[in-house]
Length: 221
Image 1 (cartoon, rainbow, N blue to C red):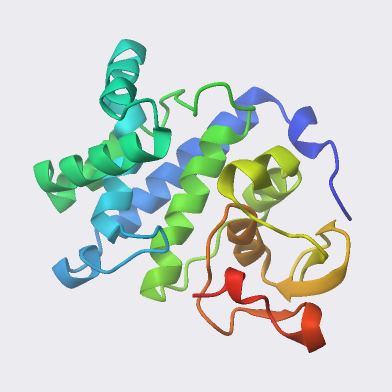
Image 2: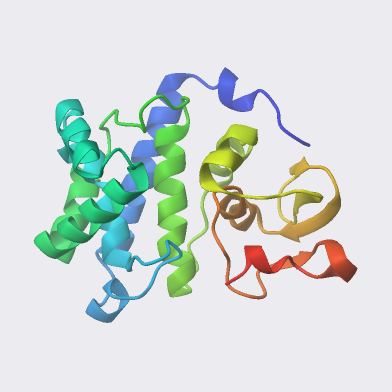
């Protein structure tokens, strides 16, 4: 199955419920981490687990005018702004505070500006995977959430996150899902979601690909 209209047809209430559940589950996971795990590098380049967790709560703590002011301080560059605020907030909040911010705002309606209905869920699922894959944690994202997000992947997503899938067709090992055209590249559905969001994965998580069945080096760390 390639892209479908699943995401567009899913009621907003169901997406909101999935997002809230994801946030609560991630908060519970964060509460189990050791100090060393909080300082482990995540899949977000340059961020430890604590910077990722701090970034995940930014939208709950920042009004629209406040967001605009932060963007201005970042000279209009969204990535520069999010990097600065994540580092600042990771230093300002303790581990339990960061977990509590996610749990207490589980039902918050925030989603990235000018984004589609699943964007808030995607934000939390992808950043949760940035943490769990880096830690080698066995958590699996529930299938219904993965399907919503995988079916919403489009060229705009790939462009925004710098995911170059030229000549590659992603095919999930554990779900009936594929995307793109070209030589098949296989992996777990949640790992392929990370590929679509521009993440480089640990070696061994993907298989197949072009050039004699080699995984493109741009997709692995």
